[in-house]
Amino acid sequence: AQSVTQPDIHITVSEGASLELRCNYSYGATPYLFWYVQSPGQGLQLLLKYFSGDTLVQGIKGFEAEFKRSQSSFNLRKPSVHWSDAAEYFCAVGDAGNNRKLIWGLGTSLAVNP
Amino acid sequence: NAGVTQTPKFQVLKTGQSMTLQCAQDMNHEYMSWYRQDPGMGLRLIHYSVGAGITDQGEVPNGYNVSRSTTEDFPLRLLSAAPSQTSVYFCASSFRTSGSTDTQYFGPGTRLTVL
Image (cartoon, rainbow over all chains, first blue to last red; front, side):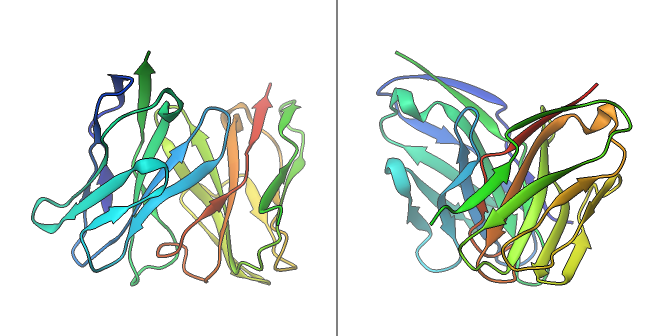
């Protein structure tokens, strides 16, 4: 069965530091991979997605993610974190064979110290 | 475009009461869905629809009904509210009928408390 694991429940970084949020998935074929962000009290917003092609994808707000098939990972990165990046981050995986729903990770909560 | 709108933003119910959470989108999206979000449990799919007149159950459908009479609207009905339904509810939509391969657009959420 498909599954998504976000190993880090909570991460704290200092403003200006680099960030990497981990996402591992379990899926047989090439997955459709997404990162969403949820600011406090808000709905979720798409940061970036990977379907095929270049394994390094760029998203909004300066985020990027790299698909590594050999590691079944899709980690989210940002070179320099801003205080406004404090939010909840969700990784999700889908597939064309079962196109009814996404499989969601439980999320990583990011806090940013000034 | 207003995107995905949800009403109300907040609601308090007593056990046994019924109510309808409203969701509308103005993007002509085929796929719409309802999630609930609870601490430590992430997002769980309640019901979804791939077009007007077509609905199906997600992971946690018990206690909820949906209908999709138009492309724009996808209301969620709580038949007899229970404290276990205290949660934040999100409606989402996507352009194509695939809910797993297309970008989801989320509403701002409804925070529901059942006493």
